[in-house]
Length: 228
Image (tube, rainbow, N blue to C red; front, top):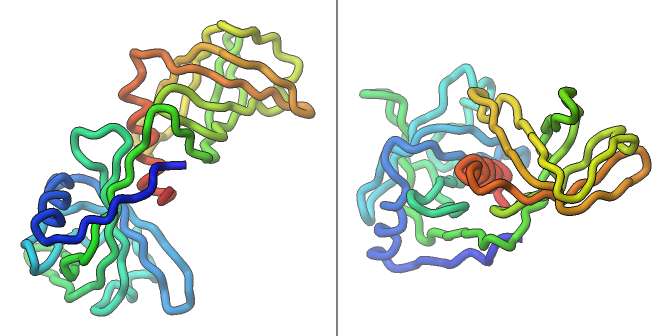
């Protein structure tokens, strides 16, 4: 589990921490419909004016679909964005749509938030997740799932892999395909534990130091999109 969020309440500190979310960076917005349905969209953080408002790009219409009718004044919105220069750290706040603009581009004007939560992960903290992956064993790729992850390592379940011969200290090449719909993420590691579970194989692995940047990308993606 991540560390408990730290509430920031003064205007000066609110502004300083919102400033860690760089203009032009990717954020995730959560919108709740009147029927209680929650939806998430990736979009762009534009900026803010202290004590006044926050500006966020309205997602493309083809991505919003029928949910575009909820992008109106009074709708509650949760915004999450990566804090620049921090590993596995996210700023999050809840606000309300103040108004929408169509020019110079489609923009949500949000009320300036009353609190900002800073969520950060220590190296030893693991996050439960369900990430599809592929593991390369003797030139063949096996379907797998990352069931929890930290900066230093993760737990993997290889489906129908109980017949595989894998030992402690073996090198392991893992691939997360179509990460954020645009790239394959390589996660090379070393096996630290092996256990058979029914017909599956559970591996505890330690990430290689050279793929740390990829691990940080994946963790940031999880804590933004899953809201842990």
